[in-house]
Length: 243
Image 1 (cartoon, rainbow, N blue to C red):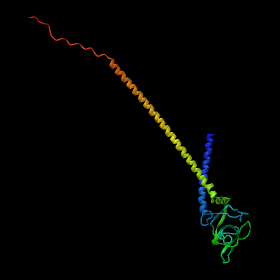
Image 2 (cartoon, one colour):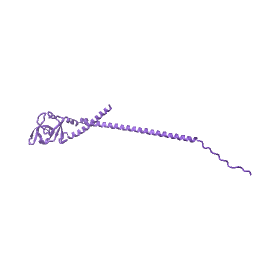
Image 3 (tube, one colour):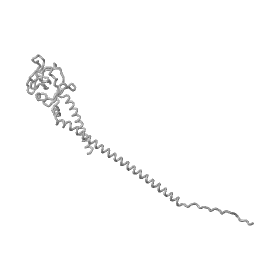
Image 4 (cartoon, rainbow, N blue to C red):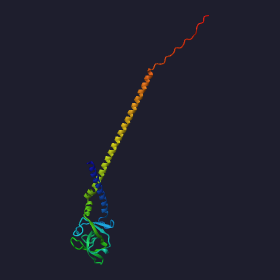
């Protein structure tokens, strides 16, 4: 059970790390490239679809439209293009609509009549070549909605701030746990060293006591031994001679 819980914990942690890393990379790329007519990634441009004007056939609001650079002269009827709108209601906005036919504006400049497939109504103005950004090549469903949510304060908190804080807290707990483990091991080593010193001291004291006891025994033996007998000196003088 403990091993299973550890595996689950590690999987969750790696998932959290993967999500945090993905969110950071996605945020950097999306902020730098999404809805930027002058920015591209691998030759592709990305735009968040803001309306359902093409929902009947191709993409819906909240999708990401993928657009590639193209020579406007190569575009044909039925192609879907992204362009800078010159209509009064959406002047300057990025629009992605289908080409109904090739035409020219009042000044004779070549361009396109475009329309949204949901309503079928033609756009107000002809899209001339200078306003064409590129040709639509595909979509990423609902990623635009996620990007727009990410740009909000709740989105930032939920998708970026919370995962990073959780990782920081987890690493902080691990650091504290490792520090406590280190201190515990250090205290255990110190305790073991103290016991070793006490054992060595006890052995030294025992040896000292044995030496003192042996010295005392030697002194006792020397004290009980009798001193050697001394021979008295011979008296002076010889035999008396009678005269």
